[in-house]
Image (cartoon, rainbow, N blue to C red; front, side, top):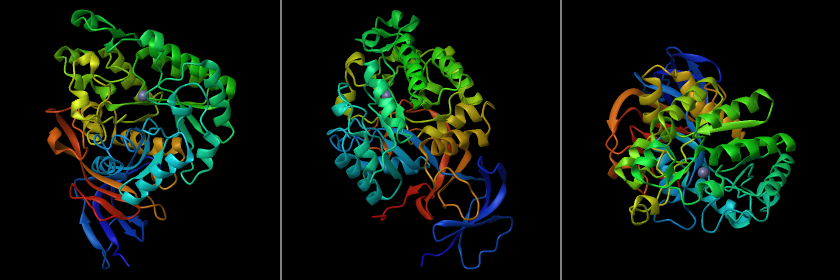
Length: 438
Ligand SMILES: [Zn+2]
């Protein structure tokens, strides 16, 4: 029988119980046996957590793992390593793989491979439409009834343009209370665009994508979610007007949740002046006013959670002219450091709110039991311990991801994961991924 583990002297921050105090956490047989002051070791392995924050491990509702199909850019194993080192215990893997995750066979393959790797729980997102083509609804019921038990559907990477089809997807999802997310981008308005349309695109002479391309689709989807009485999740919100639309819909009782990415919360379109394709992403980096509105939305809960939209790209694909490069940025390994540096250190968000937006709330949205806390006796020992003061500089060559397209290369971040634990087993110990889970 594996030995018990005593996480000693960490600052336990748990939004579920409201606890924010120095406590010891005793872990036995995969669950939390006790949370208290001055707990005795009684033969348990003692792990000193002095100076660390101990919290429920993070949950990412939005990641692209590229397997099956582009295992040169990322695999479920390498993406799982990146997630674990970032403090995550669960992630939702988007459906735009090759083949597309639009059938029971593919979602079960992704789910089972994730379990076999054993570093994070990988929950496949099912495609809304066959082949992401936006023409015919995928077999959502079949994916829901599969071993992967899919309750989250999206064509992410592509936007469902047909309003009638989007309505039917929402109505179908409502039958099993599933969530539908739509990559909000009006095809006509976004056509040919490579960056945010505005002052900077004008100066650089690059074709722009107006905020309205996102806002029109979000406004439509909010109306359709209301009509269908279904759950809508808005991914990677990027504009101030989108935040306002979601805020108003929530006040009107629409069943909507929303996420923002660390890069949209931290970076602006002025970075595109370098013409470095690492800064190309969909939706594009926007203006300082948009960043400020996203931050306000995250603070007041209009934006429910942070999701990474981790999007690895092989170097030969990404290193092209800016407007020819595929959109997407890495995110799993830098999310915590970006959010502490940009939001917690300046006093905009406290640690309880940070853990809520990265763990408790995304776990609740996806309906994940055993993730997102509570940090309390009897709950799954699925935890992260991080140093909130540690400063580190992002070196793309030292990431777990198989790709290196991080927009934070060379930046100093604050906050580093020291340990991650999934059901009582360390997946990361002293900053190193623990292998041999298979
Ligand atoms: Zn997307």
